[in-house]
Length: 184
Image (cartoon, rainbow, N blue to C red; front, side):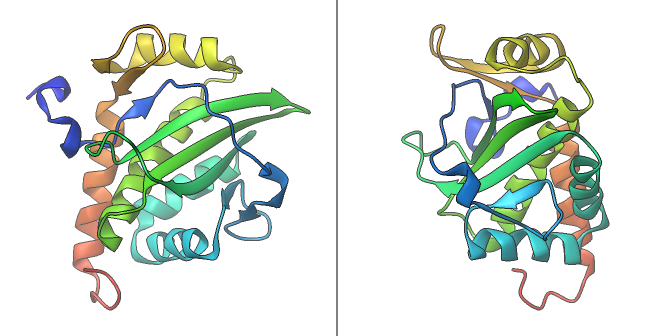
């Protein structure tokens, strides 16, 4: 089944909105040396739980950590209720590229982990393309590698990749195989 036939509620979409994040310097990394940085302690715990419960999730964090991409993770409310997550490129400076992943706050805990895994796969995709350094090259990259799933004029296009859908499914399978503990 083509990715585009999935409903927007079923996939966490990739947004090409220009994202502005206040006080980036105050956001805290998931671990002291990680390139995956959480805005809150709750987001740090989400990253830790995803890493503890899934080798695929850990591999995503590791891939980002080994790249020049620094990813800030935060929770947010989306006006589009069916949107679960998105990633955008913020800037490139000082030998690093900076991105933000925003995930919808109001999801069950496991869904938050799966949405984050999905968006981290997008981060790995961008990390593997060093020429992606701004909103324009970000848009070009996903226009060439992703599948357009929604468009609202020039300012907002949502792309999806099969790899991100598959990575979230893999993390889900791995989370189901562990003693559920805190996962639902």
